[in-house]
Image 1 (spheres, helix red, strand yellow):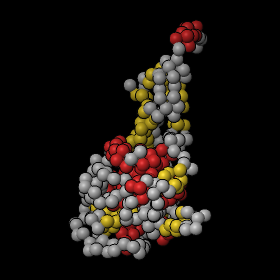
Image 2 (cartoon, helix red, strand yellow; image 1 turned 90 degrees about the vertical axis):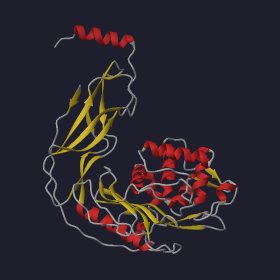
Image 3 (cartoon, one colour; image 1 turned 90 degrees about the horizontal axis):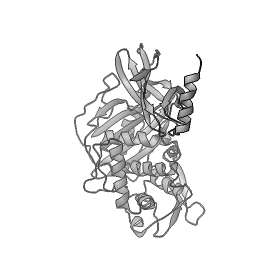
Image 4 (tube, one colour; image 1 turned 120 degrees about the vertical axis):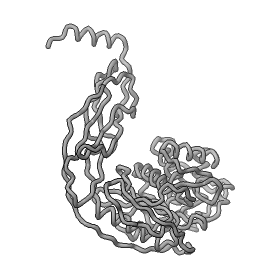
Length: 408
């Protein structure tokens, strides 16, 4: 059986479309000819979007909060992701930080293998040590292949063991178009991803708010107090030239062409745009900026519950506690189009009716179902915000006998 909470309705209204392209160039990237592939655009947000990335081989535009896809083009094509690979490297790093397995002040030693990486690098010397904080700067801003390998070795003991972690995490996130062969995106056999999967892991990375400190910085220094300070300039120029942009990762190889997974936030709406196989940096940045413009002009976020809100009371059988408050673990929201009245938006909290102790923190105990009219448009898992141990026999005995003699 289930317990259904009462729904509520919400109304929204809106604005209009604007499209501004922001060109930006990366001085050390060349511009080969574009890959000509016919685009297919569409939207799971209830409308057909124009072709926002005509020069990209593959693209997707997604709401970061809900995962709603507003525009996509060949989004499940398996393609070389180049340095966008490092999004997964950063994700595993910040997850280790948030779980306490790693500290920002921990030292990371560069092996000879890590220091030997070519391409984009922060020029680590064999045996050189930097903090996790500095390594994250080197990965996020300078796209350091050497920093990525050093970080991988710190977390897993070897790059190959870290790659196993990357593929396992990709599987957990439902990234079915992805297989990693290294941690930095240098050309390798059987190393591929898709625009869709890159958007999925980008969304997951953005759940860790600390990452914006690194991906959203335009310039910084490494070895600042040494005789040879190393100036970092973010390879993602949109963080400087597009209002609200604060990440995430660029990529380029001769095979992959010019790639970018970018994020921007305005008025509570955060979006993720991914383009793969662009002909040059100017086109790449311009098309991503157009995707951002489209999202911010056409859509808004309708908040259902904010993180920390108490949603309901969960009854627990045979537990140390008979019930616990069910608290929102994240913001629950719905992406709605501007300019069209959205009548009949409602939600229901559907809780399991027979939850028995022990209950683990984070255990799924129900779902939040969002409707627009009669159509189900979104579901969120609801999870226990605290653990509940199984009650001992004496507590259960007193609880049972107490209820026998209680009065109405």
